[in-house]
Length: 160
Image 1 (cartoon, helix red, strand yellow):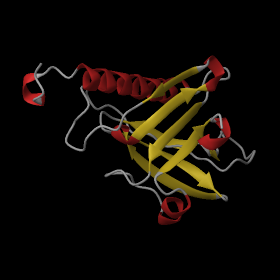
Image 2 (image 1 turned 90 degrees about the vertical axis):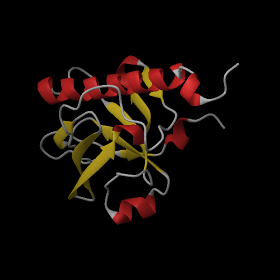
Image 3 (image 1 turned 120 degrees about the horizontal axis):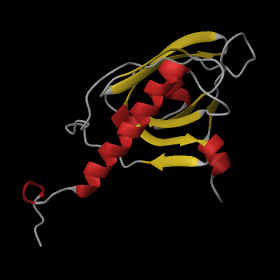
Image 4 (image 1 turned 180 degrees about the vertical axis):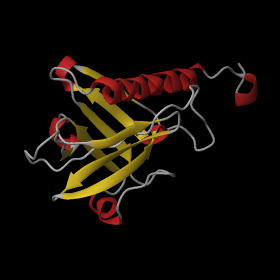
């Protein structure tokens, strides 16, 4: 058995990168067509991951991990091979978030009972797909004109 990563095909990492491509493609389709039907996304990411750009008060409020919901209010959604960005509203203040795809730990669309859970990619690992677009989303939980999103804690979904 070969233990050296240089001599071993890392199928686990290949699968992780391919599944992150599903997230990228889902975001691309929403950018093109909007959210259809009851589709909405829960995206959990590591707030302290290199390249994550969120306001400092959100990092303080959500140390380590944060979940955003793309459902009703989000703006400037964009994605490329490395990251997505979105503008969400927090307490009626629009904030631009930039999140590397490698920082995502969970991607779910509850409307169709679909979820992916990821192991973190190392900083030096690049996705195996080509960059396209960037993402923006607005999330404040209010029923303002347009789409609405919310920040949720996954703890309420976990079995205790």
